Image (cartoon, rainbow over all chains, first blue to last red; front, side, top):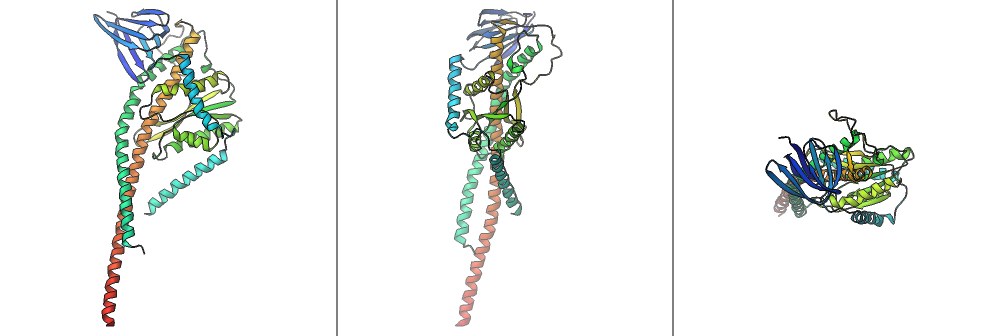
Length: 137
Length: 287
């Protein structure tokens, strides 16, 4: 029987990898049934169960949104680790910006390369001194 | 000449320090394993998404995404991954050195730089030198959560979308082995051209559901997030390895110091005894 390679991964782990004769999932535009030899397809993955059938064997996984890539002999599920929504992303972005803005109060537009170089030179000199001390011991 | 009490005090204080550094060495050694595991767990996703992106790059898509386009560079953004804690040798400072060198190079061509920072050490350094910081994430812990990086990534990508920056670079240490960590500055946007997959036919395109633009946007964002996440977890592994080496060296140095001080202690003690004896002999002779 023809089969298709399935891999389900999320950014922090591999959830499943193996062969299947049929895969069912919920795309953002509706239910999908993917059989071997499917035409190349790229679509969103809606949060929900993914069913992987291999002969009479059936396994079910839960995915929380992401993307599905289908090639004739491979199907890849790229699952997010968490629920994603634009508003949530926006909140995260604002948080990261605010963190930075705390420092911006005393910001200089131009980087003081001379000062940075001096700091680096100082650190290097310190290292050298330590190494020298070590040698002399 | 120092007296015996002083030397003894110094020896015991160094011994205490040595106990601490050797404990830290052992903690770091046990954490290396864990951080390496996290690094490996994330790999399948980044490999898969890379595959998908290279498929897309090879397909004859009707839509070309801004992340693939080269434009005239006026301002660049460096995403700098650093550690939250110190005591890890030259790990952070070597990386910053590379970043500063690159930024200075850009400055020569009239290109401005801004920074998106991950980790306490980076924000301390770039604040001190007065760089423009656009986003910052700190205290990610030993097992960073990919979700904590979403915000920072979005800030950088939004800036790229609005034309405020034209290129982005990812700066982090890469884990060669326990003894070696290599500071790296990699181009993130525009995405470097990927090698062509020979087996793939070139005249085909996906069916996109819904639209290509929307899908590619989401997918490329995830791709860049995954690259940054991988860099962060790899940097964590580097941190523990560098910490282990630094603490090992510190313990060894403390051992050497103690040896020397013990020699000094014996000298001092012997000198005191000799002096006392000669005083007694001198006293007896005088009577």
